[in-house]
Image (cartoon, rainbow, N blue to C red):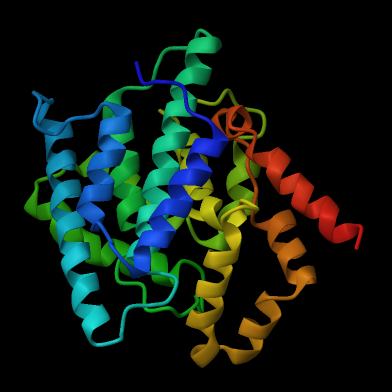
Length: 280
């Protein structure tokens, strides 16, 4: 069983990886391996064939993303926010939430989720912004569907089970920011179980935005998104830095309802930011 983790540990790790983004970048595969070690998941152990296919796909895709990101960076084409740092942020965040979820399930005496589901979540997380170009959706799930389209050859090359491909597709599509309120509403009165795709969606979407939500890590991520939007959407970029829009983000997008997020006290950090903005 994984060791206990805390929000302060997560903040330290997210801060460290951001500091190393411009210098001493360890590479996305190294960060993924660190996350797998934390979760005590090992692709080299004897896994069921269906799970092994996902593990192999995850490692292959991670190597490809790092090489593609390096290539983009040499041409000054890697997005300022949707880059390898964001991929790292989301993988680190998900690994912490998965451990917290395990701990909650132990405390609640519910069955622990199978590692297969955790492998599925990791692959979905890694692929959710695959080939993101810094633009925003012109219609629902536009960029998310593009990510799925880029992921499909990897999934097919590794012979992923069709049911897993369908689930991964669903998870990625529901990371569209406009889906978040509906995502949380769907599981409001359900028992939280990672084997329920709607519940797994919550853990994925929480991981996607976590580094941009926490008071101690949000400044760097907000500035990165500002730089990404500055050339494409200059008006929206300026609005991004206004407190009223930070408040809107915290109230409507930065939603956390998983037991894991509650165990890590993420919503307390979020509420403190809301209170600070509203009292100014």
